[in-house]
Amino acid sequence: MKRIMIVDDDVAVTNYLMVALVQTDRFEPVVINDSRRVLETLERDPADIMLLDMDMPYVSGMDILRRLGDLGVDIPVVVLTGVPDVELAVKAMKLGAFDYLVKPVEDEELVGVLDNALRHHAMNRSIQQLPTELSREDLDDPKAFAHVPTQDAAMIRVLHAAERMARSDMAVFISGERGTGKEALAKAIHKSSPRCSDKCVALDVAAINPDQFPADFFGQAQRWGDQEQERPGFLEKASPGTLFLDNIEQLTMPMQVRLRRVLQEGEYYREASTEIRLSEARFVVSSTCDLTAKEYKGRFDRDLLYHLMVNNLVIPPLRDRRGDIPLLAEHFLKKYSKRFRRRVPGFDQAFLEALASYDFPDNVQELRTIVKASLVATDDDQYIGVDALPAWIRDRIEKGDPDPLDAPEPLREIERDHVQRALRYYNGDRDRTARELAITLSELDELLN
Image 1 (cartoon, rainbow, N blue to C red):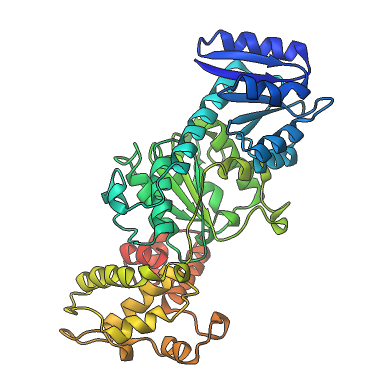
Image 2: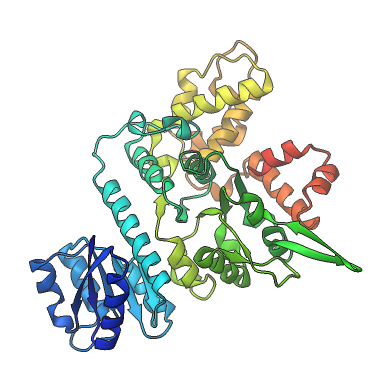
């Protein structure tokens, strides 16, 4: 039985909440109507979780959250508010609150949020208690993360945190610079989750025409005379597996609001239909942007951000984990040697030293492009040397130029941007896009990934 502290100056509210929680036979309520007594009561009689009202005399809920953080009190907090206030909720989250509820609260919603808060707190505690020295072999399922090669200590901690997050159904937000491997990590999370036997659908928001996105994402109901034909969207195709959304910041505001409904209630409707449908898909999303920055205020739904940021993984840039460069280069060499049917034994020392001196502004994605181009420029049975590096990379290494703005874009980026523009032009029709570009669907997918 979990001990829950209910803090609210309204006696009627605390009485209702106390009765609702006692009836579950899973919670033991401790009621506090005077907010000045919270800290001393916690010190004398610790609780497992707290329900905290925001608007109280003497000491506000926000002040209590700040004080809990200053004292290092480790307890999950669910905030109660009298009126919906997303900005207040976001501030509370930044101070450590898990979620917020608007009074009056339905019993089922209350218990569901408390259960999620307790599970998330247990997961976070297990992540914080991870040993300082970790290895890939310490993962419960190392094979699930085989396509994320690393020997960097910080990156290995990210993998361990990702594995723990994979066990729940809650959304995961992956942050990192362009090309750091966010999609590879998202797919690893799926493989190590209970949903691993189901699909993992990856979708780049930036690659689809915004006008076409709602129909592609949610599906569409089309009527032909007296007959109705329904087209499922990516959301339905991903259920009950995992849906990975890259470049989440590119969503239009109406789509952000609709996605928030899916995350909160699991409900959605197809375009041109009013029938409510249910989704069981688990979301992993990513962005290169800091969506908490002021520039995104008014451009990104704060309530959606609040739900996404509960589980946040930050991938360090490649320049901060240079020890991974030889390991990743070898990984890509094996991959593309097999694909291109090439016999290249490896890299010479000068080539690896040149890579080690480069800052990789486009991170792992750029390293992959460089290895692929260098492999193509090398004869079979020869080691890859500095002469095989793309000319503009050699030029930047020799000049020590850290500024990528003056250099040509990597070929991979040029190809990817071209395919994305073609997809938008043909309204997201992958078949027609591949046909017009004279490539196969598998080649189209490869250029987009």
